Length: 235
Image (cartoon, rainbow, N blue to C red; front, top):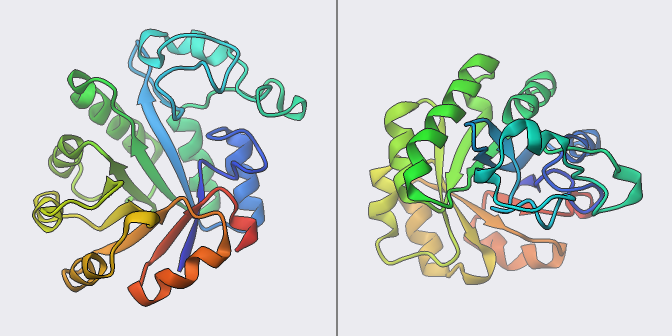
């Protein structure tokens, strides 16, 4: 199984920051997952929540704040005094880091408003192309199926993973529609018969968010390929 550091080494450093990703790399992680959305002025930034309220000293929706104002926020102090003055990184900055170290990156596209799907996909692709990162290092994931359909058309060379909490009955049709590489699903709801069908169809299974190594054992017979965890150091 591959072990993916969820939002960087988010158990040790503030999630989705450059220091969290750097610490995951130093630990030896070969894969990191991040969340991406766009600022009001169209800059792809790395942050999970649709608001900046939880993980910064600011308030408001990410989509309503220009990048320069997002960049001024402290994204580390909420976690620990040690990380004061960490900031919300751009996707470009994260890509430069993973390019330098040659690790894999799962880019989850966070979409609050469906009217932003095209803008987000286009801006993310533009940043990736400018970065010159090898597309084999990257995978797109999203709960928003329409975004993955669009990415298949706009940048087919980057692999796609459909995010689900519970796998729907029409899962194989949805995966076929996006020419999927994998599914990302909540391990608590993965059923044996679903796993068999998905693997037989040729797709990988990636499970989130597993923080206790003992929870891996029931997944081994299901041939899960990737564990996404806040605590890769435990594995």
